[in-house]
Image (tube, rainbow, N blue to C red):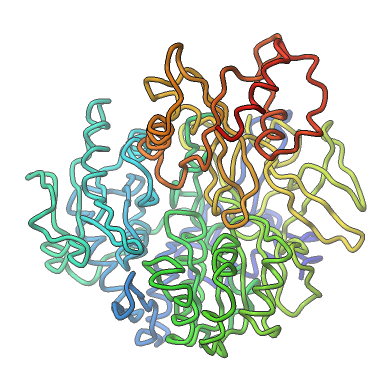
Length: 634
């Protein structure tokens, strides 16, 4: 299948796409179903798949199965933050609730092509909102409900949504987070910059907070439960072109401004459904659980669209893996008889620290396939996952992919070839990885290089919203003729791929990609901070952690209070997940004579690799290095 996908990609993907419902089939010229230009030297970068074909991803994820007589099958099992809180929806019920919300959105003037912002925790209303937007041709922009008001406002200003959907509050572990306050502040910031959002649809999550305690703005704010049930449970489909936009998802860049990754409908639908089916060896009757939040691409492709397109039974989890104790995941696995379990290395490492007992006290006999996502998994965590969680009988799909790729790019197919702990193994159908050197020359055989992709795949992202020039500059200009992933990679003698992490200024903390420039900008927003430089350090649980070197304004004294204030500045600007693990006082930063910060030296100091600092003679003031070393534990 892989060979055929490269030799004749049009015939290969056309055959798979034909399994879905198309209101109008795509026109084929000489058997071609896609067009691409990845080479900036030959004109604007452009990718199209199945253009001219009319379909709807919500119809294919819901109506198609209901019409096939599967409406009474469970679509979602919902497991709340606290044990004992649960619910479920069949495909029939899910379709009805999606239609009701879609009708509400239409009533509020949302039309095909309009944006809707979704700032929700992992309630069933989150995938319902995504599907409702898709049903009427609206573009959803899901924003992780852990981002601060400033980060939320930034995204609202960029996509200018007609409606924002949120809830009043959420319990995350033992903590209560007031989401509505964050939304109110974000909408005030947006309004001050000239962008007004007409309606704020708010789900009353009374387990976390009562309606009475929720701040309210009459005329704009609407309680979800008060209005949705009034709408009809059927809603006409908006048939859209395969190349019409489906969603925007913002991802951190190496500059401060997040990038609005745009995915379109047809190719994304075909690719996410196919990758889900093969990378997890999905079989009818499987119970599938991905622990990711729909605020990230994993929740789009492998909580919502990929599984539902395959008529899977999906577990949605509102909580955190170690609450109320480290056995929670395995308790849920046993409760729902989960057969496919997909999580992040960060979660695996944190559960490893709790030891064997929380795992062993649960059966886990239902597990058949395990998966890993978000960052390269270190071999020791892989072995623990395989030997302890899976009892040495469950293959692990260690998936490499990105927000930009929309679906798995390099991944094992369970049972199809031997696994190597820590390797994503081989490319998926239609994917042609290439390792290149700094000059963009492709290197063969055993090597280390920059990971690029030759040629498009159906779920290639089409642009960065409102900034096609940045799309080309970031991903296609570094190595002409290729998509550049931003990752380094090693290929071994067996042709297996081993991801070695980011090569740009993006830090991967617990699978969250955070631009160093974003964190530096947040630190410098503190009135007593003059300058900041942020680097990544290895962390045994989160994979990487944020290590910040901070230069204070003249006359300001170092203090623990100030250190806390700087961390809080980052929490406020970006969110708690971006808070630096360490603030290292820096009287000055190591800079070249041209003023460039030598981050290589900062990484060595942060990692305590002091015997291998390299050449520091090019620094404007080499004495700065020793000053920083002396302040390591201050």
